Length: 437
Image (tube, rainbow, N blue to C red; front, side):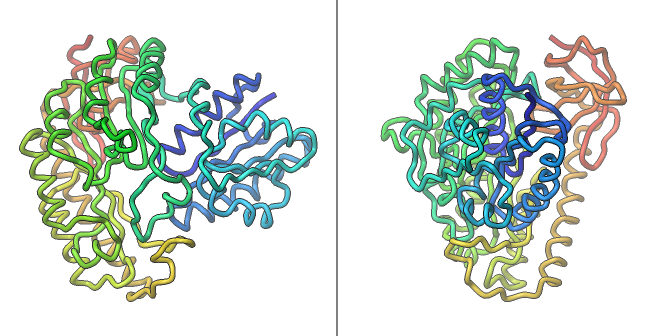
């Protein structure tokens, strides 16, 4: 019996898929890269923007063909879109056998048994399942042997007016430090060198406990023997404090890279988004980061064309990009999400104008990224070798999250090595290994 999982969306969705793969393998299934031979197909969905919604329906239309030669194959839809609109998806694609949301993934064995018996297994919980942490008892099945996502907090308490995540993922629920450390220890023993702590709002970790801080978790993970690197994604600017930044600077395991979404540069738009900070307050956080970690690489998310955004508002976003000089920007046109406060707000600019703004912003960032990459020319950087590509080059990332291709022996796979950068590209670096552990 074989399974195939198609994942859309963020790191949280990827980690959920890794957990589902672990559940299926525990049940005796083996993975396949060819969905046409799968006995179980799971589509793990995202609902942050409209485009992933459309991709899900398109993928389901294709996966339906599996039933022509394997009528007993089970097709399931899960994740954020399933949580928000699971019954609607089923109406559009009645051939689906399973639909379940984000908080009852641990019910997959029972749902699968129900579906295999010929019944429709549709279970979308409106309340948080108090036993959802049972999911963490299952193994994760990772494509990358040397880096691993570890979920430390689920859900989000923020009320950003454009965002559906609080609806699809629920309130913030932190995992106990002891449970997290046991998972980290298991991963290290399995060969993992880099731990990536994840959550919808990871810097809010511990607030629901009342007396636990995110920086305490960072320290605890760093003390696990064998953890070489630590990253975390994604934090809300409002919850990133100076204590956390100091700990980031003090712990050698914490990489000099941070994703800190600003979403917009205009105070007026930030207020309409209910982000809880001004441009000045955001830039003060950036200033602190650069003060304590001078070589930090920064990335961000930006929404272009939020309802009410004028060209002057857009220029405020451009101003921030130029001032901060991000290493990477993830920019998208605003996409109204049903069920959010901003969903019914009128758009103030034409789609053509928004496309032009987005393209101009992307081109500006491309130049900045290339400029930042040029600083690595002839420098020696440390990378964790994660794979060997089809050209037999070693592939890894610097501590600042730069993608590096290096000439070297396969013996370096899974090791931290020093690479001299000999060529700089717009989105990657190339070089040769000059030493390693």
